[in-house]
Image (cartoon, chains in turn cyan, yellow):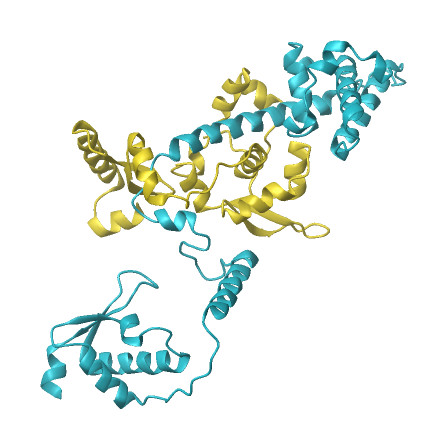
Amino acid sequence: MSAEALPQDMRSCHIQLDSFEGPLDLLLYLIRRDELDICDVPVAHVAGQYLLYIRAERELNLNIASEYLVMAATLTSIKSRSLLPSHQREGEEEADPGAELRRQLIIYRAFREIARELQRSEETWRDIYTSHGERDRWSPGGGDMEPGQASLLDLLRALESLTVQEEDSPVHSVAHREMTITECIEALEKAILPGGRVTFSSVLGLQPTRKLIVSYFVTVLELVRRGWIALRQPFPFAEITLERTVRWTLDS
Amino acid sequence: MKQLCELTGSGEDSLVQAIARIDASFREHDHAFNIVEVAGGFRLATDAEFGPVVSQLFEGQKPGRLTRAALETLAVIAYSQPCSRAAIESIRGVNCDSAIRTLMEREMVKISGRMESPGRPLLYSTTQAFLEYFGLADLDHLPRMEEIAGLLGMSSSELEERDLFPGMDHAE
């Protein structure tokens, strides 16, 4: 059939292939439109309808995704096979050329329904906010991870966030004086008043150097060992809070 | 749940009942909160009624809805996981590259291994974030065989006869 011979209504209310999720979706649409039974689809009829659509689409737009063309070829092949007399020997069951396609259609329709169900849940849950991890849920890279769980994507993200940080900090070199543990202890003594609390990051100040972080961290461990401070960390990777114990004052 | 059992030393049944009681009292008094079971645990959640108000807190952070392609791909992965891209594409009949990429970026899907076959294709599975996003307690809470059959207007035996979901456990 040439394009000119397309029924007029087909061209006017022709539906763009873009609105279908692939050839199976289009086939299901045609089957439903013609009120056919999916378990007993007359392939010849559907093949004709399908090709009409593809032709109409090609009239307007040459770029038809290859999968639509593959399906067109499959349908044509099934149709031609069903028209040919079969050469099967007696006793052998005649293979139905359309059976595989029907099976595929039923499976696809099942998953399409499941996808709709998921969409309904999505709609419902967009309005529900839960207590934990709400922000984690939306910020990439959030959430707890177990060893060996990191994927390539996670690693790439981590690298990305590192390079971003690097770019953000202004470039100028300042000669940093290294701090000894004793100096760190003195600084901490000033920072944490008896009975007071302070977070580890506030001790470090803005943009601490790696050396400074390590020095303070080792100092904190040393102080814990001596029993001069107590540490609190509500969950892994959370802010550490330092608390001065009575022993610090007593011992020193 | 296991953790709760260990912490309280009570049985799972009595804990579930206790949680249900707390939830019931929330609902009875028309609280803005209730308890939901999601992603293998229990959480305090705001009532959907207040969604529009609460959403203002997270303005601009909320990701968009998933596309139909992404939802379909996710459905296939959820039911046949771990599964390869080729398996998903043979069911959907279209290329699923970008849908899988979107789902990976949204952390709904992760790579869970490789298939021991030529080319060692990657296998995909759903994540905890998937359960959270759709408010599912666990994978068993996905629509069951009978429900799918109902949606299709077929009997579940009809579906099973055709052995459409070889990977699925119908026994449950």
